[in-house]
Length: 312
Image (cartoon, rainbow, N blue to C red):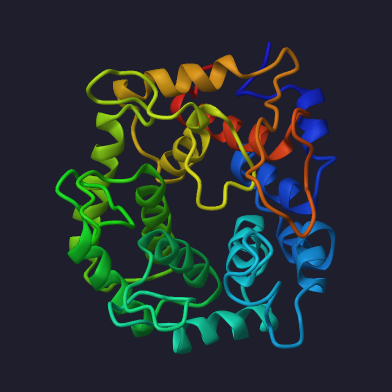
């Protein structure tokens, strides 16, 4: 029997993980702040490994978006997920470079020469890590304008909205929601009332689909959405969506039932969740092994269940 999702053995196993895991376990599951752990995240473990691979020009890989997963963009996103202290000079510098130099004509961010239009999914991710590492300021206003002008009628966002897309994309919508949430959590106030309305409309878009089901057939839109990956990069899955809604402290909605049942079904006898999938492509290093119990997935799943099923 697990009390609040945890027993002593499971807690001990989680706390044997990387310092970033330890910090988030204390903060999110035990409701205890551990500033000494927070300050250690960038000096040991996974975050330290990422930072040691940063080049003199501030980049990882071959620049902003090459190669995928090992580039600057996805490394900054991963560092944000690790939750280190926010005033790391080498990170602040490269994020400021993005805000100052990587804008394109539509107000979003582009890492591709001569592109007139940004990729909304990428914009959401940039806003996500930029808002964490740099206090939101007027340089982010143009991407907020772009999000508000490009939201689709169904409430979602789609990076192919200029290419006759008629339906929101799960992947793009969640990337934008994560970015807007981080922006607001870190003090962003530009067009705040409109943002709140847009975010609520997008959450309803996800709810209509029970997070991963076709609103017409009630069958899974894509079976890959039911596989829990980490890091997720730009990809959408049920755990990633549930975790974000728990972060927002969203009240339980009956339309979450199927997603929560799927989550609980994947839990093993020891109370753990496995890393079920890894998105194809080279990585700077692997934090966990596919098919093995995952501290990342277990931590996130426990936070979801603690929020939506507090009496489990």
